[in-house]
Length: 334
Image 1 (tube, helix red, strand yellow):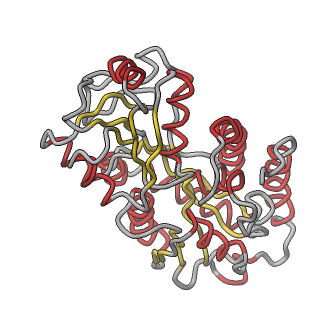
Image 2 (tube, helix red, strand yellow):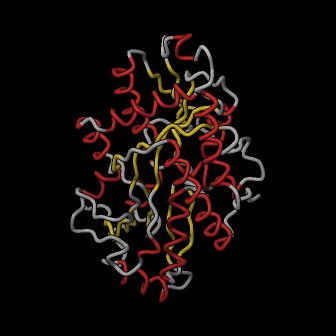
Image 3 (cartoon, helix red, strand yellow):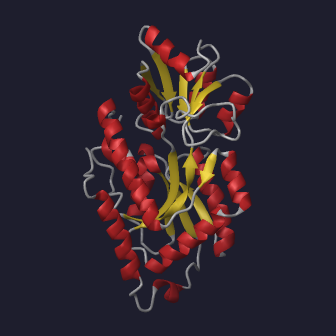
């Protein structure tokens, strides 16, 4: 199913503006009544422990706990590419004590893949703010006779059946990135989906398939540092500080193939405006902390702040762009 896109941005911005306006009319306000926050906050992470979303969410939760004076407790609820955890937050009480770490794919890809995702990314959620952007890297195992992206494209075209590329799952943001790369470069590539990243990188290093499209994270970075995997290109506007020798897709002549994944915080819809403003301000201040920035950059994440309205607009833009990629690649949910 493809979720309607023509009015998504207008709906998102109007919903956010209405929430902020109406929330300010509450008398007395939710914050005044409760002294928000006066108890621990549950931060739902809709993916398994150890991945990029999990580590980024836990990093922010730790520093948010110190700032708010209440524990922000990470709660992993994996399943269905983030749908299960997101469904739980969509139906939670909009009181500021249940929040969601959003990897953009859950909101901007899943509605195009699944007949029913169990939530409406606009109607059921209130955007709080962005955390950052994560680069995606194209990696080859050492047995691949291509040391650059142009060589890889040429090799794929001259290889019977093309070259297989592995990702952490069908319909994942890395799968979308691989399909976009295929569409824009003309490379002959075949998707090999895994369920998670650990076995994926082990098999890639072992030569089980030629290419890997992934977000950088510690186990993968270690194999790259050991020479067991080789990075051909990175997405995003700039080269990675940890891989300064690796060119971006834009530098290689494919700016339209750039795709980064982003992280942010959402809450159930109808969250009081004062709580939205409080959480947005605190998240932005946490992201300005040098220790937080350093920890996120170790994950190859670039910290990035926003207003709720700006975050909603980014999600809308990515939603529309990914609809085209999914349709062109004919990607279906498993």
